[in-house]
Image 1 (cartoon, rainbow, N blue to C red):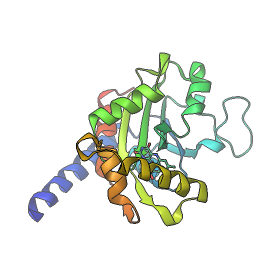
Image 2: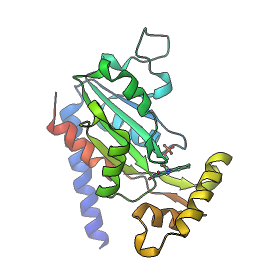
Image 3: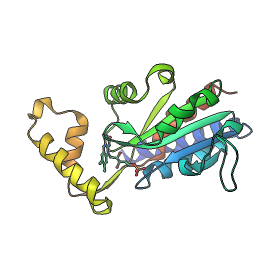
Image 4: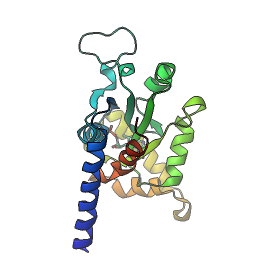
Length: 209
Ligand SMILES: Cc1cc2nc3c(=O)[nH]c(=O)nc-3n(C[C@H](O)[C@H](O)[C@H](O)COP(=O)(O)O)c2cc1C
């Protein structure tokens, strides 16, 4: 079992570096918004694997360049990376607002949540966040972390309310994210893993500029 796991990891690493050499010459930027660090971690992993520039959403400007700020419109590939909060992807307002300036570029979104990966759940996140002309932007998912001790008072309170509501849902009607929420309750969990970047790396490799 251990050997099988190692083999899988080796394959992933090799595939990752092969992809990396294929795209390092392209110019791209990873823009992230992260409250508790998981989306930031994924953004830096993406930057490491691709050679793309990495910048916090707060330091990006779409108008006149200011000192210390980065202009995403100067890049051919723009990847948005953000944590999921109450089904909304953090930082996506920036993409929505400035989409006309990014049209024609290679765009992708990498969202980070506490739920285990599920195609159905990702479909719902897409419907909720990507409407109109954003509907076709490729969307990828990575599992983040959960630590109630590190949460703000407001977030902890929100989670408590959510947990109470979820606990009343009959077992057979519970969605995977509901079970994950109850499971993680009171625990410190970190599910971040570079393996979640495989889909995005494959997309960047296949859809080369
Ligand atoms: C108030 C609150 C709401 C959340 N809502 C969701 C959610 O709807 N779906 C989900 O998968 N994870 C949800 N999470 C978990 C976060 O997405 C997860 O902790 C993620 O790692 C946060 O990313 P960040 O560390 O970059 O901020 C929520 C967390 C908090 C505190």
